[in-house]
Each structure stands twice: as C-alpha cells, then as structure tokens.
Amino acid sequence: MKSHIEIQRIEKSKIDSVDFNNLPFGSVFSDHMLECDYKDGAWQTPIIKPYSPITLDPSAKIFHYGQSIFEGMKAYKDSEGKMMLFRPLENCRRLNKSAERLVIPQIPEDVFMDGLKKLLEVDSAWIPTNEGSSLYIRPFMFATGSGFHASPADAYKLVICTAPSGAYFAGKVKVLIEEKYARAANGGVGFAKAGGNYAAQFYPTQLAMEKGYNQVIWTDDNSHQFIEEAGAMNIFVRINDTLITSPTSDRILDGITRKSILQIAEDAGIKTEVRKISVGEVVEAAKNGNLKEMFGAGTAAVISPIAGFGYQENDYDLPELENPFASQLKKKITDIQTNKVEDPYGWRVFL
Ligand code: PLP
Ligand code: COI
Image 1 (spheres, rainbow, N blue to C red):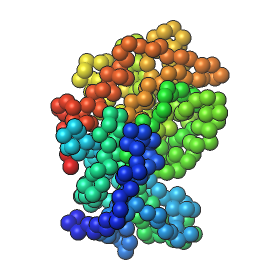
Image 2 (cartoon, rainbow, N blue to C red):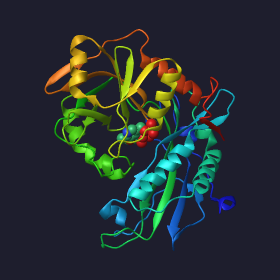
Image 3 (cartoon, rainbow, N blue to C red):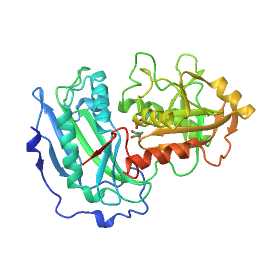
Image 4 (cartoon, helix red, strand yellow):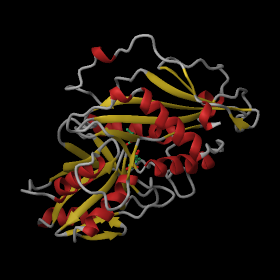
C-alpha cells in the first residue's frame, strides 16, 4: 500500500499570499492534505490532494456520536533547509491508543508515517524557518459510516492537513484552577485525544475567559483538590528548585512534550518529581513565595509560562525571574527540534 500514494497536485500554490513573518496559529492552511479511507474492513490507498472541503452523509456517525480523534505535531526546517519531525511515532502510537478507546480502526504505522512524509515533501515550501514558527500538523480520524444506530461506524477517514503557525498563546497566560467542572473522569476518555474532550471544555473555559483567564487548569473530578492538566497542555509547577508534574492517568493526556521536558530537566540536573500536586500546596507556596514558576507544555503551546492563577475568587501572581526553568527548558527542547544542538535522545526524525 505504501508505495502507491496517489498525488493530485494543486494547479497554483497560494503560498505567495501568506505572510510568514506574521503567522497566526492553525488558521492558514498549506496547499495539500492527505486523505485515507477505511471501508470494507481495510484502510485504502492514501491520496494527497489539494486542501479542500470534505463531503459527508448527514447521518455520518461523526455528527451524532462524536467518533473523532486527532493528533498535533510539528515539522521544522533548519538553517540549511533540512526538514524534521519530533518524535512522530509517539503521535502515531497515541493516535492508535485514542482510536482503540473510540472503536476506530488502527492505522498501520507505516501507512501513517509514509503518508505524512510524502505530504511534507509535497508541501515542503510551507515549513517556516522563522524563529518560533513551524508547520503544525493535524492528523485526525473520524467516522464517515452512516446510520442513526448508536454503534461504531463501518467506515472512517484519516485526514492530515498542515498549517504554518506561530505561537499558540499571544502574550502572558493566566489560568483559573477549576473547582466545579471536570474535564475527565476515571474510566473515561481523558487520556485520548478525542474531539469531545475539547468540546466539553469550551463552556467552563468560556466562563473562565469572561473573568479574564486564558485557560482552565483542570482538577480531579472526584475532589477538585489535585491539579491535573490544562485544556491544551500538561502543567508543571516549580516549588523552590523542584519541578513537579502530575502523573498521567486515564484522565490525563500522556503529553510528548511533558515526557521530553522531564527527561531534559533530569539530565540538566534539575530535581523533578512526578506526583499528585494538591491545589492547597500550590496556593500555600504562592502565598509564602516558594512557588517560583508554573508553565504549560504541549506541541502547540511548546512551553508557555503562566503569569498568574486564580483560585476561589483570589488571584496569585508568579514572580518574574531572570532565567526561569521555563526559558531554559524551552530553549533546550526547541534547539533539539530545530537541529541547533545535538540530539542525544534520537528524537529528531529527518525527512
Ligand atoms: N494535554 C492536552 C489536553 C492536550 O491537548 C495536549 C496537546 O496535544 C497536551 C496535553 C500536550 O501533549 P503533547 O505534548 O503531546 O502535544
Ligand atoms: C497540540 O498541542 O498539538 C494540541 O493538540 C492542542 C490543541 C488543542 C491545539
């Protein structure tokens, strides 16, 4: 299957209309996309075609029962024009983990990886080279099979489209520690990148935004006493010189940035702890000056420092440090991603 990807090229590229010096996040799309259909019990040959709308039956199960999952990854280009991905197999494996939970058929790793590489070859001119920008890649799979019976569909589509992108957050990030709503529950789908997980966050996030926050930090659904993660990133807190992040579970996404940062921090001699973080501990540390930093980690967010948080009607500001762990770790991971330093971990995959 892998050697027969059909390529339908666009007649005229729209790349000249894009201002690569002012890239928003995820809203300008490159010329081509990949589509691969699952039908009659098998994934078919992928097609690379011009970026275009998808036509679906109104009774397609994606619309009614939300069988939909996605991934987020990035492609980078170094100063010599070499193109690379960061730990792409991890994304493919997590896509299949999400697929299993949502009863979507597994995509073979070679079909995913070969299709992705071919798509990036075709749209290589769209990979930005400016500092802080990259080509954001959005693979997603959803139920195209139709019928109102509430059961898994018999047909699916994998699509990969890409968007040259700048920073996810414009400016400082202020978060609200959630006390009422929950993102995920034990035994649920929190660990999967299921579209519905994000839809379910919109309402509480909208309430938080009305109060001036950018994101919600989710707490455990049972007691709301422990920090889990944010809407689009895992969370790290630094209390004195120790960097702490919550353990992953079936409620928390096993972030690739999170695990890379843990590895980099440990190797840089930073003391790390993976353990439950109580909200009380964070509030207490903020009050007595021991809470030095909080930041989010994710593909889109990279490392996004948190300037302050709200909890129970109170606001807590974080100090502005000279050389915070967040900046040191962000530099290290982006230098690896963009081929500026050695990659002792073998995380870079050249195209
Ligand atoms: N948590 C959530 C809910 C996310 O959507 C993301 C983004 O993918 C992350 C964490 C970070 O994961 P990763 O570093 O693999 O992008
Ligand atoms: C990513 O970081 O790639 C994500 O999928 C987060 C998304 C909500 C933008």
